Every structure is written in structure tokens, then in C-alpha cells.
Image 1 (cartoon, rainbow, N blue to C red):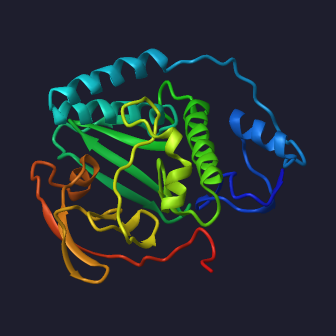
Image 2: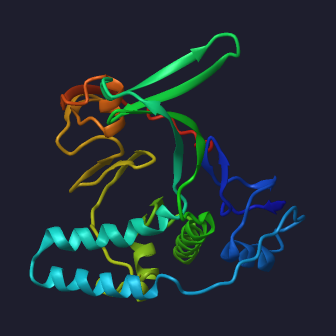
Length: 283
């Protein structure tokens, strides 16, 4: 149990929020150290202890060197590939997966997914017909070789580092924070000057300078040079404020649900943004 006046500890309540006050949560190593130092821990329910090791060092060093090499020769595609590989690996250790069990053969059935409603037991089952076999979804659990503590620690270290940058900048000198970035004032930028190393691994870099920014919500803001809106493609067409049309490319599951997996159809859809902020009260 935590009692804090700092919005630094993550809690899952339909979405990830950072409350203040007294509440139960799960903390990783860096968060525990911070909470102990601040005197925020009031009670402990359960504890799990792991042996620690720097498991990603050789992986990160290898791909970061490759990324710099590709960048030096102007190979933008491979540079981005290396960036995505480094950014996304840790998440695989915390990935959930559906559990499917083969229950029979269906050599003449088309590939598809079905929902079966058992009205007597008020239960819904999901069936998947694929390549002449039929499978029953038995549940959702951790993927093969998963280890959620690894993913949790990586994200916690990143959150606390971002929090430390916000404290260094000072209240009133930062306007917005995302997963790995801050929008700060000129005063805030000056306080981060000693951490700016554009080519250094883990260092900060200045992405853009501007005189104004419009922040509408989470991952939804505009500067002079660009507009970022989660879920909206760069090629989307704006119809009106908060309304866009864009292409929708079907996923593997979407193809099975359609009942016609042999037809890959790209649709044009209209997206309406509610832009409702649900992580706290805006004052």
C-alpha cells in the first residue's frame, strides 16, 4: 500500500493512471527504491524476488551500432528497423496470447472464426476454422517464454527517468509528457542542456523548436511542424474537427471474421474522436 502526494506510481483502472493518496499497487525494483526513499510504503501484501542481470546489454549495443551505421550512410529504412527492434523486444516478455486447442478436423470448411452462444449456460465460445482443422479458444494467458517482470521493469525504469527529468525541469516548465518525450519551455530546455546528446545511447535530443503548441489530449497535439493524433494516419483526410476518413487494412483475425479470408479488402472508414480525458481532472 502506497501513500503519496506524487503522481509517480502506476495503477491499472481500465487504463493506466497515476493517482495520489493511499492505494494498493504493484511496484518493481526502481519504484520500490524510490518509494522506500520517500517513505511512501505503508504496507506490503506479497513480495517476489528475482536474480538480476543486465540481459539486454549485448543486444542493445549491437543494434544501436547497426542503427548508427545505417544512419551514417543514409539508409533510413534499416535505421528505422533497428530502432523498432530495440524498442519493441522488451514488450514481448509481457505479451498476452490466446490459448487454442484443436478439437477436430474440417477438411471442407472455409477458414473463419465463429462465436457459439450457449444460452443455457450463458457462455460464449470462440471457434476458429483454419487450414482444415477446427480449434476452440480455451482462454487468454501469458505467451510462450513470457516473463512479465522483465517488461514491467523496463517500463518502470523509463517512467522514473522521465519523472526525474520533469523534476529537474521544474513545475510550470513542462507542458506535456509522452512515453519517451517532454514538451518543455525555454527555461526547462536550459535545465536539461547537460543531458542533450543526440547520438549518445539514452541521451536526449531536441526534436523540434516552436513558439506555440496545441495540446488536445493524450497523444493528440499539434506544433508548427507536425500534428500527432493517435489512431489517425498521416494520409487521413480531415472532414471536420475531430472527424477523419482513412484506409483500414484488415488484420489476420479480421480476415477470418469476415468469412472470406481469400479476399483482402481495404476499406475507407470514418473515425470520430471524442477527445475525452479520463486520467484525471483538468483544472
